[in-house]
Figure 1: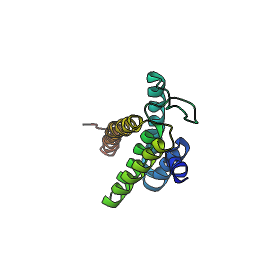
Figure 2: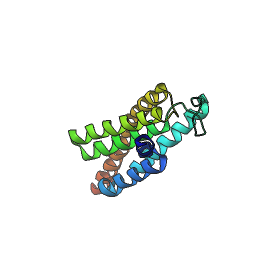
Figure 3: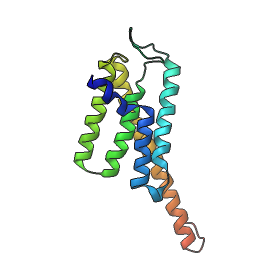
Figure 4: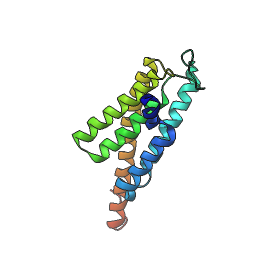
Length: 156
């Protein structure tokens, strides 16, 4: 079935590959921050799953906890980052489509309730905004340091 195939677009290994691709294509000079952001999202969802310990729906053929959906959260962060790096409306719409398809697939194959994926997407969006703000602050600090070095070591 198609749902079993598209759900892999949200697998942790797959979103990590997307992050590596973002780094190599768009952020080579900026460091591996996209990879760190995606790995941080995986860590966050793991912590949340352990904290809430919500069982999967009856009949789910996979282990672990259901809430929130790691596939939905990971897809939101990875494809959201990709869309922002590409920077076009089309990329944003494509990212929303992939996130929706991945999230829907998790419900369709019976491993999540709709609330699991809805919260996964919501937490993913919140995490992405915070992560980008932190990365932006770090980049600004690097620029100030670079300017100070160029200015003879005077940091204003």
